[in-house]
Length: 124
Image (cartoon, rainbow, N blue to C red; front, side, top):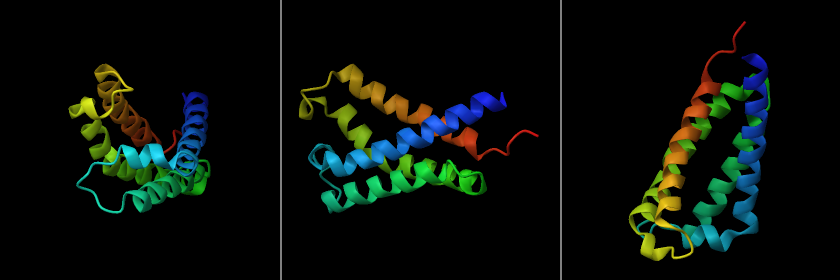
């Protein structure tokens, strides 16, 4: 199981960091999906993008991988209101099917579960 865990950890870390970089490349998209009740949309998009980059890269270093995984969990829980907003207000996102918006919310749970796996001590 160790080789699979290591491969998934690297994929997850790199994809998390790339997703964070996308916050800087496609800022307008992320600002557009922010729930209206949150302040400072652009600043939050940049902050969450930077956090994703840092945490994704940190996951690749054995010394801090567990801490990084916990940080990823906290971050993904923190951004869950965005996914809920999209799922319960599909009329605001006509480019996406309602099923895709709910799938995105469910995927968030799967990713949190995967990050939780990386918080566990490595098998000996």
